Length: 515
Image (cartoon, rainbow, N blue to C red; front, side, top):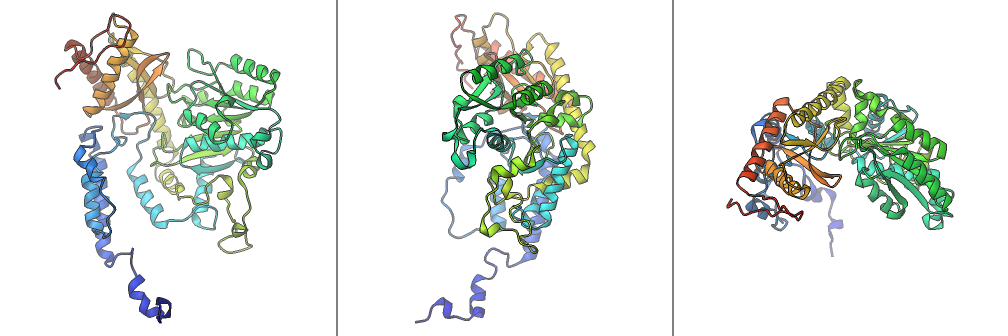
């Protein structure tokens, strides 16, 4: 009986050759040129389209079909992308996208992503030029953010992972015992950490993922600038020690998501040093205030952090995903994640000369070449271009704040420190509950009409329309249009009685407008 293994290699070649490579490279090259042309046309005309539009039901239905057994070919697959995907983006490439804190990306960054995918290394530390690229990107970031050049660094998917890994290092570095060997269940005293109630929810996720539990996280009050109240921090540390807890870390914010508030980083660093706490700074977007001399003072003290998390896919405008973690004590960083596997033992020469260089700084062994889009972008544009984006967005937030402040129909709900503006539309005599319902509807209609994409939050129990400007395409006339349209929509909703005040303190009803 003959099996496939009995056949000569030459006989197998026609069956295995080119299964996923094209039969005609020139044909695929032409399709690639078409893709580049289409994408660049889309980006260059983005201002001419709505900021957002929902995906129609017939399009959504197309995504519920079974996996094809036989492919339709690259050209038809790409046509499906053009019909079903390209017309329905989140909108963050649009000049009037200011939702959450999501960067725009850049055309050059998109091309860099293609190069990274074609190069396709596993940037775990195996010897490749990609390792040197990531090392240089990390060195550049330390230089731009004025961080210790001896610190260790790692590129990650984003700030959430950077927060989680920073706290993972903190747990082991500040524990009273060998956490790696014994586990948290053997802690002689329960470990606790501190943060303001404005801290990003990824910190809440981190305490769960690390096995600390929700009760380990002390969420402390903020002042009228939405900054951590230092006396409350000091009092909480003292009280916990008296009750037998082991305080080990404090999370400080360099730009909160809600309002862009920046904690008093220098004073928190003093407290952390005095109390032997690990200081972790979440600088997801606010860390890049360091690029602009006019606001750099706001992040003074950030360089004293034991660990710093930030995103390059926000204010640095590189395509998603790209975050970063710095750990000032490089040995603590390596110790938290290094496990030596036989198959990653470094050799004197060859591909494995560094073993798992980056793989030993986090949980991922398989790591994409996310450094390339940063490296190429900084080389192409220079750091001053990014400083200019920060400077312009801060000025635009100040401009929007003035538009709000001079309008009797609008009310700002938080100070504007960096690039985040929170406000609401107000109607005389309406309760906060009435205004909450009205501003919810305004927010949704502004999005659904394709005018702009703000997001929302709740500040001191009041619903706020929230504008976070990390957008290199935004102009002042975009902000003028946005404010005018908010007022138009609000007046229309009120005048037609689509939303009516309750006059009783109960939640108002959204009336049927016949639309």
